[in-house]
Length: 107
Image (cartoon, rainbow, N blue to C red; front, side, top):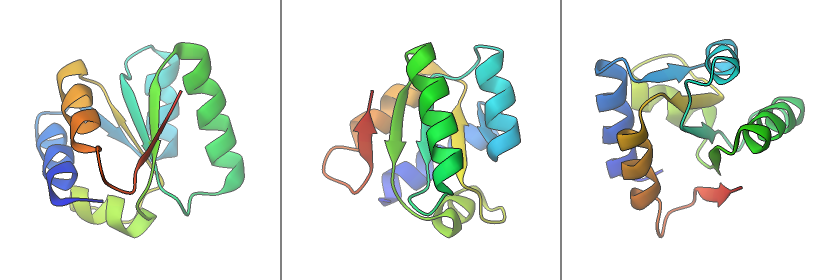
């Protein structure tokens, strides 16, 4: 995960425009509040499949990359498997920053 993506996650957290952790992201998805989801590579296969299915249904872009440890560090929190962005502007900025990094965009 590159430095720009880490910075954007930190800004989104401070602006209260992100959900982190499986429960929070799933709840935000069910309310239609999420514009983009990032899943850690080392998240459980079941969690990945559940989130990918929910995001496909909702038409939300997904990136898979980094580790749970890296996602937690980007937020200044404990390791977490998933981050959901609640703001379209932050979602667009992160998608632009993904060009050329290990995160893989899926539909």
